[in-house]
Image (cartoon, rainbow, N blue to C red):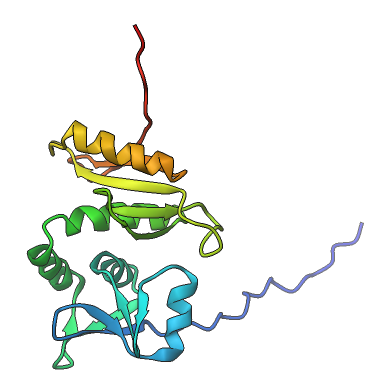
Length: 192
């Protein structure tokens, strides 16, 4: 038996790394991207929407991009804006922005495309993996923090409308430890 020497395995060539997407806070405090060559990159994976010559992100989308290191954000004076600063500013504008971000981050980390809700008291729309943008959202999320009260009548009415549209209603509850638990909500009729 003859032992042959082999060259050690070579590391694969480094993959080109895109620079973080440059975002900025506009005068109203919204996060926008002005580099049009990055619009397609954002649209393809379900972030934000075009508005004229800019691309506008929801606060929870911008927070996620900052959190994951995919965005560098600056204010109107060119100063860097940190994740913590944006989170604080978002919470001062919208009370449940942190709740939405936590659920958004959890769903994105699971490979889902997530967009803002579209009424009926919903918070987020979730597309089945691989369906965006070809198909409509399959799930509609109601976001709650543990201990938060929600009117059962409002939830019932929203679920009826969502089911009529052919979507699944999900209640996402954030536990005190920060873990997100999902509950599927369906309509049930009890007969005597």
